[in-house]
Image 1 (cartoon, one colour):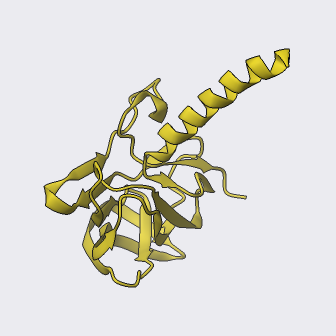
Image 2 (cartoon, rainbow, N blue to C red):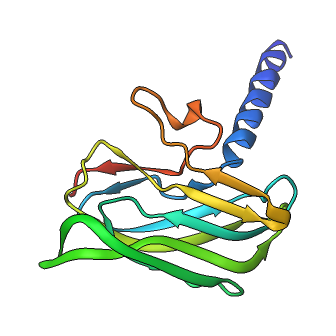
Length: 175
């Protein structure tokens, strides 16, 4: 019984931490090798202050190319294209432009529901293993409510130090 008194408060703290962590838009798989294809699954666990989500905008970081969003029933997809800062090698083909942002809109995700928004992309060999790559996300809801998951940690800080961190992907060596 004595141990139960120390274990229960610890479990309650873990539950609070899990709740706070689930309040963010996160990536299902948070680690991937450079020079490989990556399936990014953005998990959306709530709306904006009780209002349903009607639009998700994902900014594609430099060095991530050949981006292809997965269609979602009831949602439209917009692929915003532009020039890359440099030319990337995509399986022997020089690539200088492509999708820089994906926008899913037209659907409705209630505040008390969960969903996932998916894209596939290539993580170029120019990216640095050991670094974290961030995908800023803007979540728009009804009645003009918006949540910007765009904070990128400064040197020496982590996503846990921020209220609205961008989803991060830890880059590893290509195998």
